Length: 286
Image 1 (cartoon, rainbow, N blue to C red):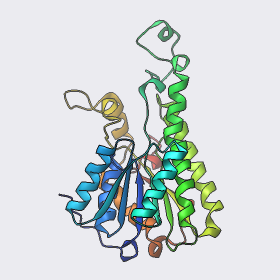
Image 2 (image 1 turned 90 degrees about the horizontal axis):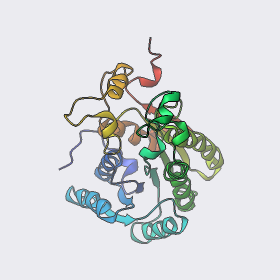
Image 3 (image 1 turned 180 degrees about the vertical axis):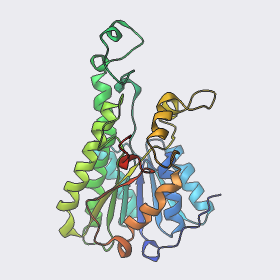
């Protein structure tokens, strides 16, 4: 059963919060905490069973939640999801754009190009990257942020405390090796966050982003943890460049989340990308 010692934010009580990618490791905890704060939650996922599992967790702690199956890269599906939210919970106050991910066929095998790798069928260089997979990664991360923002912002215009939170990454300000598509997509989200914050300011909608550092999720586990549970070489590099010397826990994101979605604590904050990274971004490596 989910528990938390974080202070309650009365301004969040009774707000309608929509969370895309809501069944993921990070967004699941966000959904549970916002429910504990008294928000009404719409958990959106491409797989209804996964969304329903999170919604049921919320109900078990006394919260109100619905589960919606939706591919947020699809305009028609997302518009339908927005209508369901309005009909069952009310107009959206808070949107968390958490849908995203990467695909191994959009990654290179090694950090740097070596000519001999082009003759190794088990090694993918820049020249072997799959363009369709590259597009898919851009689509699920960037288009999957753009479309829900467009659909749900329609419901937010002029509402007190309206807030959009996009999910960025440490790969946005400085691209990580091996994952060019994901890095490019998250960089686009940073830029879009700033653009949308300016565009929607007069409508009373604040737009910010949270940039997590390194958290172990189901999507990146194979890159960070070996089968025996030990850390990979990539993980050891990450820890060496993280001054706090650990991976993040999903709960580490909640303080910033609550601050950003509470208009009484962050009413003059928009267009910001807030790192939650254990100092990774601040560390030069020397």
